[in-house]
Structure formats: C-alpha cells, structure tokens
Image (cartoon, rainbow, N blue to C red):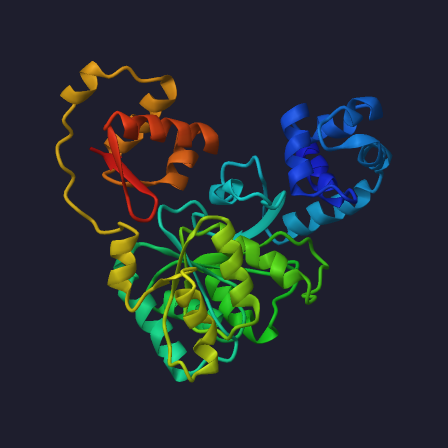
Length: 366
C-alpha cells in the first residue's frame, strides 16, 4: 500500500468532491496527500472549493474504506489509474468531466493511436449484428482498439467480433470489478481481459444501478477518436452516449436503416440532424479519419528556416515529423502541452502554412 494511492482513493470518497474539484485541488496542492494535510483555511482559498467543501475534506476520516479498496485491488491485480497517471486514458482529460480514478484489468494500451467506440441497441436485429461484425472484420488489419459497454446486443457483438478478428477490445462497466453484469458475459469478460480489458470508475461493491449507466457512457464517448452508432431507437443509452460524444467534439458515425425500422430510428435521426456522419462501411470510416497507411513523403525542411517558432510550436512540428498525420488528441497527449496551448500552437502554424488540417481533426506538415 502506498500513501499516494490511499489518499487518491480517499479523495474520491469525499462527498461533493467530483472530478472537476479533484483536478483543481491536485493542481493547487501538487498531490493527494497534500490535499488532506492542508488546513481548512488553505482549502477554502482554492477556487471553487469554499468553506463547505473545505470542511468536508478536513473532516474526512474514512480511510478504512480506501484501505479496503486497496486490498481488493491488490488481491485481483487491478490497475488503479488516477487522472495524473501516464496510463490513464489521456483523451478523457480533454473532456470537461473526466473520472478522477479508473480501475482497469487487462493488457490493452488505453492510449492507443486509433480507438473507436461501437455502440447500439440491446435488442439488435440481424441487420445490426451483420453490420457490426462486418465493420469489425474489415477493420482487423488497422490495429484499432475497440471500446464498448459489454451490454447485451451491439456491445457484446462488437466485443466478440473484435476477439474473433484479433483486435483488442475494452469493456467499460457501470459497476465495480467485483462482479460482471450481465452475468451471462462473465466468460466474454474473461477473454477480453486477456486481449483488451475491462474498465470502470466505480469501486468494488458498486451495483449496476440504473443511474450508473449514463455515467459509464461518458467514458465510452470520451476515450475514443470515433464513435460508431450501429443501430438504436430514439431513446436509450446509445443516444445519450452520442450526445455526450458530440459535446466532447468527437467524430460520430451512424449506420442508416429503413425509415420504417424503429431500431434504426435513432441512427437516422442523428444523420438527419447532422449529429453523425452517415457511414456504410469500414473503408469510409478509415478514409474520413485519415487512417490510411501512406508512404511518408520527404519533409522539406527549407521552409522552416525563415519561420520563427515558439517552443510549443517546435514541439508540435517535431511530432508531425515523426508521423505523417496526427489527431489533435494525440498531439495533446504526446506534446505534454495543455489543450489550449496545443490549439494555439496549431493555429499559429496553420497561419504560417507550416501545417495543414484534414478531416477528422488530423494535422500534417504542409
């Protein structure tokens, strides 16, 4: 047991202290132990905390619950990922409400270069099953991480198709890792741990209550590059996830269906209202996301001799020298810059014609 992990967990147990406040506190004090060792008067001065929340932090003494969680983590070899951990899914940090702590069991890279989330109805049709299976099969050679929610229907089909086609797949859970829900997917989850993983922000003992699923859905929406809605009605978890992804500025795709089919009503709505790109096959997705593997052109460095660049801009250019095209989220992750600094550097470089943008929030040297 480390002191750092104990206090990180404890921070998630303090009432009214969510991910936004946790991030503010860590930024101010440096680490979780320092938060709990601070005086109430010091806590009150932190922006957004105030007297009421400062009192709750200063009075917190339920460290036994944190110790119990550490015992569970160690017993089942679960990886705790505080939001400052380098293995934490960095794309989530670009969202306004990232989880403070995640619990992960598996072997996939949660910061893989290409990540898609595949979602849809629990009561799929044959069309939904065939569409999902073909999509995953046609993406098999692209080394893409497939994320979904391990639910019945499209989620499970996506996970199973990924395993069948040797693609790593991660299931995001709406409960603690001491159980699998639905229980019928216990065997599937076991296979996924060996070729992907299972992930949650909920501590052990948390039941799969109804209100936990929308909370879970924001992780499915936030940790991907592209969200693909295969088949869904107008209401339900898939539409919530699509709205969340839209708020996170993710690329959203939807497969169209018959206008008389209630199971495709949600997909058709997203396409009609310009909230999703109509997609019909994997190749279209690959092209739109600029995931085609192309021969790297020789970089002409002479152009840069007459351009003065800031330190941040030089970092971005150096990253783009190593890859032909890079997604903006990957630039944020690899540069170590904040989202705002990365965006500012990109804008200046575009204005100087050093880099150019492509569809799918991709960038490359001009």
